[in-house]
Every structure is written in structure tokens, then in C-alpha cells.
Length: 361
Image (cartoon, rainbow, N blue to C red; front, top):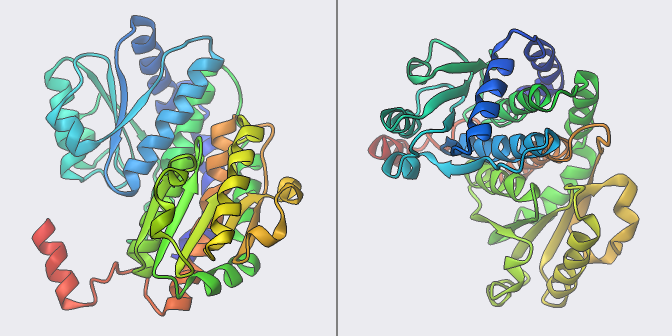
């Protein structure tokens, strides 16, 4: 896992340079998105597990790119199993599957095709089973070597950024993205004390608003699969409506504040959440831009802070999702160390969990 995190900045730079080609797969997928948007047809991204969060990121980034291109159309995200049961009719379905072999995602792609939709895939290889179902395949080329996916989460974010640049006729600077990721990958000194504070929690609540909700879901998944700590993702406003009675001094909270859109409103509600959490002894931490950290009283985050870089020259969703990707993965790695768990095997070294995985499959 650590090796994959360290590889991500340069991986992202390589992928963005390759996908910038005017005759490449990112351009072709941008054309498919534009055509479906112009027809007013459905635009849906689907996936499972980490790739479901990747699909959520794809939807957010492409919706922002469509807006920049003058369209009011939105790309929505759906869980692949549900999308297979209720397939879209016409339009475009984008399957996100890192290794391209997820059965539920392939079924969703097949079901959409059967109802007249065009189908695309964002995945590591054009030789994967899911690629056989797709009209367009955007390959990310470099496979995650840890089962606790890090590159597998970042890949569709970077691919979507490239597609969005073609769609909005703008440029994404690969060096800016590389440097943003590198700052997060080097955040271990801040992540370690946060992990130490959260390691003995009974549960972890991860909170975000806007595109930070996507990162919150991904962190909750990573904490459960890598650290074996029950975790849940909540929307910022939602957690203030009935969830506080279940929280106490044994609860950990990680608040994500990276989305640059509507920042004043989001931070005002974050202040209210942290005030409430402080009153009941919740161990709260924050992941937020270094330049704006002063706006949040330090005593409200007793579990610590992880500071991220911002990318003002990048589209907002790309900057926020790339800015949080590596620091949250570093936090997961340090939390696994603090709890004495092995993130790379998803507990398959325990016969009971290995048999549970086989039963699920």
C-alpha cells in the first residue's frame, strides 16, 4: 500500500500526459459524453467498492466539465448492482472497474447496452472482460499492487480529469496534479498523531460536503478494509440531524474540508459540527487546506489536522479529490500501523475471513 501511495504522483503525471492526445481514448469518451448531453439522454457512471467511489468522482468531474462547456446536463453515479437491475435506456453508461472483472459492473454495462445505451469503461486494460462490452475504453495502464486500492481510486479521478479537459476545451497541467498528490503523499508527520488518537476509537465517522462526500466514502471503506475499524461516511448536514446521540468520547471523527465551492457556507456548518462534537468529547480531526486552517479554532480538532495543498488552476472537483486522495491514504496506512493490522490482504490471512470472501464471491 505504501509503495502504491508513493507511486501515485508520477503515475498521475504520466497518465495525464498520455490522455491529453487529441486522437486518444479520453477525447473519444469526451465526444460520447458531449453527444449524450446534446441529446438530453441519460449519463451514468457505475462501479463497486473503491470503483464505486471512482464512479462518483467521474460523475462530479464530468458534470463540472459540462457546466464549463455551457451545458446544464449532469452525470449521475449509481451502484453497479442497482444499475444492472434498473438499467438506463439510451444515453451513455460509464463503467468504472480498475481490473475490469467486477461481475456487477459488467452486468450493468450489458444491461445498459441491451436497452440501447452506449457503453464506456475506465479501467487498467483494454483486454479485461469489461472491455469486451464497451464501445470506448479509457485505459489507465498501471495496476494497483495492493488489495487495499490506492492507485485504483486515483486512476478514474485522473482519467476523468483528462476527459473533462477535452470536454471543456481546457488544459490540465500534469505537473500541478503531480505536485498536489506529492504534498499529500508526504503528510505522514501530520497523519501519524491523528492515527494514534483515532486508533482506539470504537467507530469512526467521516464527514464531508460537496465532492468531499466522495472522499469521505472512500476513507470509510479504506479504514474498514485496512484497519478493521467500523467506519461510516456522513454528509456534513446529515450528521447534525439525529446522529449525534450515538456519538461520545469513544467516537472518532474526520472532517474533510477540501471542496472550494461554497466554502463559506460549508465551513460555517463545519464550525457547528465541531462545536457539537467538542461538547460530547468526540475525538475530532480535520483534513483541510493549509492556507485556510486558521479559520478553524485549533481546540475544535483535538485529534489533530492534516493540511493539504490546493490547486486553484485546476477544476474545483479535480483539485479537491486529488488533494485529499493521498493524505487520506497515508492516514489509513498510519492507522493500520497503530492498530496492528495488515492493509494489503483485506484480512484474507484469517481463514474465517478468507472463507467469508469466498462465500461472498
